[in-house]
Length: 282
Image 1 (tube, rainbow, N blue to C red):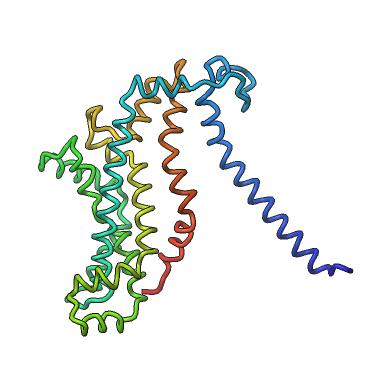
Image 2 (image 1 turned 30 degrees about the horizontal axis):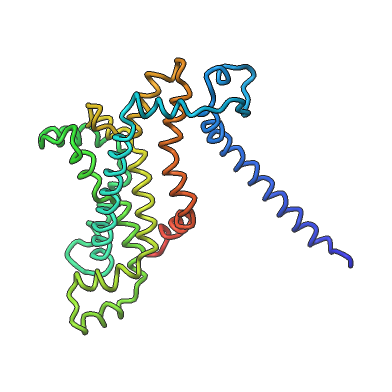
């Protein structure tokens, strides 16, 4: 059976694409592999030259030191609490605002939405000093209020939900009104079940951004008990990164990275879908 030249060409292109993607994936995975390998190496193997991915005498001592010398469990709990509350708040408030902007007509709706979109173009560094002054005025510095309340609703989340809800037919909402549903009942019984994909995307993006947030916690937090994991990694690196406990730094990085990797691996299809959702017509 003779294989056509066109088919051979397509197979060659497919092989080249997959080979290139595999090389890129391996290049991105190498730092994480090195991080995990280094976290279980004794100091002698870490300082050996040339460096090697092989671990001859694996040890969990860096992990034991990490949780004994630092309140790492408290830092993880702080980050988990902040990320979870902010994620739930964004899912509720952003979807509610998106429903209002998409399906209700009120004075200045489009101008308010445009103004909301304009806030996304302001660099976050511009808001640091005003945000710090507001938190200080309210007496919220070094509290969970400073970490949670300013992030409970994001302009990007409102935009994302509004774009998705716009595609829902108005006939469904009219039918619910005829059945006697109020506006909040329509939101709860009609809108929410239909926008589960975009809510999943918003929840993932929000959780990851809050888990990795560093600058804002650095501005408003100044005691050890209130630190989140990015601040803990910064302190860990400054205290042990250039000494004999480099393995403990890698252990801390591994512990902090695992939840992010877990979320990405199990929900990666929602990341891909999120790229498409942000481009829906509105």
